[in-house]
Length: 354
Image 1 (tube, one colour):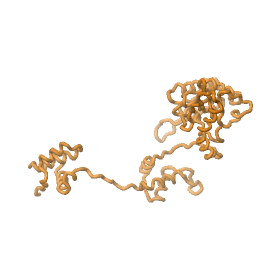
Image 2 (cartoon, rainbow, N blue to C red):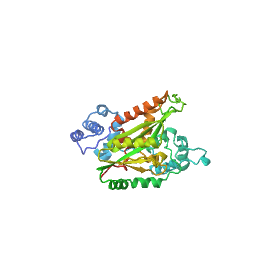
Image 3 (spheres, rainbow, N blue to C red):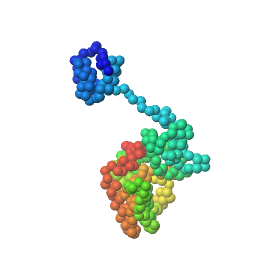
C-alpha cells in the first residue's frame, strides 16, 4: 500500500510546538505522531510511540489533511437518541402525578411496570425496567410513602395562614409592647406506647425481615413545644392529655421563653387547646392552625423523626419504662446540635423583633 501523503503547510517542528502548548493529551499525541511521520519515521513506529495502531494514525492523518489541526480534536458523540424526548418528560411526569383510575385501570398506584406501559401507550417509548428506573431517577422522581391528609383539608386556608403569619406576629408584638421579641413556638402531643412502630431496615433482597412489635396498650403522652429560631424546646410527660396537662405545658413554655420576649404558640384544634378552663400565661399568645392542618405544625416533623429513629422496634415492659424513654428521647433531641432548627425551621414562621 503506498504511503499516505501528509499536508505540508506546517512543518514537523511547528507541529511539535503546537503539541507542547496543547492542553488535551489526546490531541497532543496525534500532533506528535503526525510530526514524526512527516519527519520520515515509519507509520508503524510513529503510531507505536504515540500509543495507537497504524490504522488509527492513518485515520487521523486523513482528518488532518482535510481539516488541519482543528480536525484532530474529538467530536461530540450524540449517541443513540432517547426513547422519550426530553420535551415530553413534563407530560409523562404529569401523567404519573395524576395517578391511575382505580376503576378503569384496576390499580391504585403506578409501579415501574405500569409506568413502562404508560410510556409505551402514550409516547411509543418501549423502555426496559432498568431503563425506566434510570429515566425516573433523571426526572428526580422517587417511589415515596405519601403523608396522609384529611379529606376536609383546605389548601387555600393553609396558604392564607402561611402568607399572613408574619402580619399575625406583628399584631401580637403591637399588643405586647413590653416584649422585646415575639418568639414562634410549635406545640403538640405525641402518644408513645407499647403498641409501637416499625421502620425500614437493611436486609437481603427478596426477604422480609422480622421485628418485635408489642400488642399491649399502655401509653403516655409527650407534650412538647419547640422554638426553632432559638434551637430550644420544652416538654412534659403525662399519662393523659387534657386541659390540666395543657395548662402545665404552657407553664413550662412560659418558663423557657427568653426573658423579655413573648411567645406565639402555634397549636391545633384539640379540645384541651381551646378549653375555657385553660390557663394561658401572660407571656404566651395561642395561634390556632386552620382545621385539619397538621403539616403546618413543625413539631409534627420532630415526632416523625423520633418514631423513625429513636422509638421504633422498642419493647416497653410497663408504663414506667415508657415515661423514662420519653424523657430520655426528648433530652437526646435537645442535646443534638441543630436538630430542632433543621427539622422544624419553617421559612414562613420567623421570629419578629418588636
